[in-house]
Image 1 (cartoon, one colour):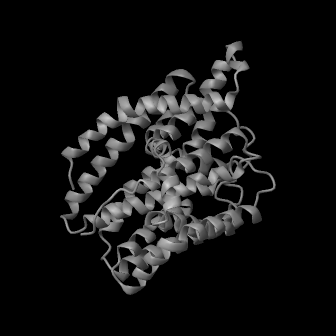
Image 2 (cartoon, one colour):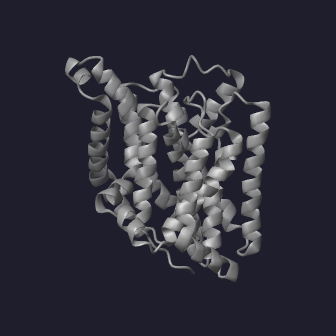
Image 3 (cartoon, rainbow, N blue to C red):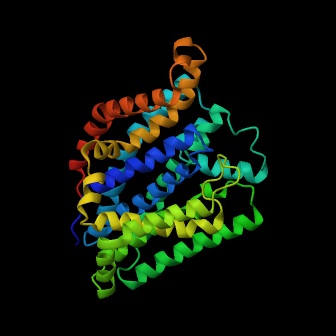
Length: 356
């Protein structure tokens, strides 16, 4: 069994991923690249979740799965349904059942398959919830299906080959959708964007391996993977800037995604393994770490704040005079901090009763 540990520098990376998403929602033309903070979140999730499954693979399979699902439910559901309930009670949400069941991403995909013209849903606050909550649906679908598949894969090269095959299948689905359904929002379904989650899983499996090749990869990660991955991501953003950034440009263009997944994976592995004191000092900076720790709440609440603040501004001259983006960010941090201390942290203490 490998040692399961928390490395605080990834918390700092989580916050920067959230900040990118927040910025793209303030000005999509200027900060279009921020939407790929979601992709970075996926890589981090795939890496960390797979590490958990590997760490306890010597325990009884069903015991591990039972504890995994119960602990994930404690982490995800209370905050999600609290924010969703408040949103439904204030600004209102159509198709609420789709949010409750975490299937809105599939609903948007099928809608844009049948009706490719997004003009009628692009900026409707009710529909905007669906478009921005899609990543949470993808994460939940990954948590539901991936552990079942992974725990039945035999450790060793066979497991890595299966994961690489899943990665290749995701690339294949992306190409098929790009050719035959180019106007559908196919990037919102796990068959396609799951490439980033599987990339993180591949990184976790390689890091857990004891072969000489894996040791070389860990040594490379310690020295140069983070700067190399960051350079690749920046270069891709410079080369493939969308001509007309829009709400559905994330996960497009198709030929950029695999290279971007590799860049993000190199960043995650490099930051996990690094001993560079400058990188560690920056990403482990206490305020940055705390904001990364509450990044799930930040992400949830900032999605809720946009239509709510617009609703308040329409009814208050005082609200209209304040800088809207600064107000949104400040209130998001304030409310996410309150939700962490009052809701999330107390509930997470129950995890002690659910050991693997």
